[in-house]
Length: 375
Image (cartoon, rainbow, N blue to C red; front, side, top):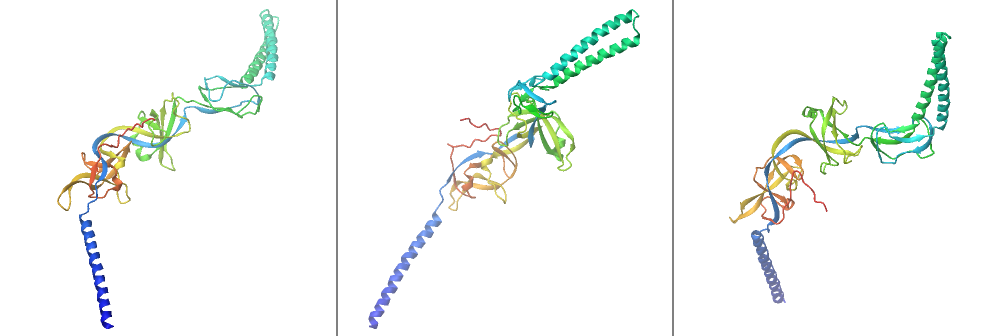
């Protein structure tokens, strides 16, 4: 019995030893394969860092305002008798837009004109008698005063009738009318907004430290948002001499031609002021920048040597200090030299020393003044 148990124990130990030996061989082979394994190169595109002469500018957010803009209102109360414009129409200065019912005033005008004509007849008769020395000078003066009073009454009624005609004080574009035919309006009731659309003002604020860089006549471009192309170009026409006490910003006003109606009063725009100077920078595509809390970096493509002594094309991570951006490009202030090749796409999947394969069939377009393709 003991002999049989001994034989079983020897068999189990031999089986365990065989299994352990097989596993040891497998693990050793895996470790050897891991040491010899090389990651396949990552496919990337590259961009050669190049010096650029960039125009120094100042960027701010502004709002569009009309050179002239009002909401026309009724001067006198009355009933809308005729509407002589359509909403959104261009009107000329002095053009009649709305007529209020003036039948009562016109009747008063007829009465006043009759009284004036009678006074004129009396004045002519009195003048003839005065020349014949048949009336006193005081009597003639009294008749002359009555005539002037009657003539003034006619002018007063005519002025009242004219005030019941709402006219455009300047050339511009009407908004949406706020009255209807037959509607009774009180004095001061809104009739229609009127905006002068060409030219327009773009007002924006700059910090007090940058006011010394600005002067009248500097070129300004404006875009509907920070990512859009400029939709207009104008010039600085005024710089407020007083800074805002709360923000310490100074208000600047630029005038833009608006013949194509690209600007609408009230819209927000991003403005760039051309300061008239240039700076030499090293520019790379924005897609080449790896942004991180501990610092921004780029991957530079270089010839490297592996542990086996063989050369390969790899990447080296370089930390950089960034400047301003222009279109697709970003200025690198320090950390990069002109002529160095940086990874322009695919940088997110790289690590220092990684092997790369440059894909020359696919390039990333980069320009300080990009023009999107129209579909």
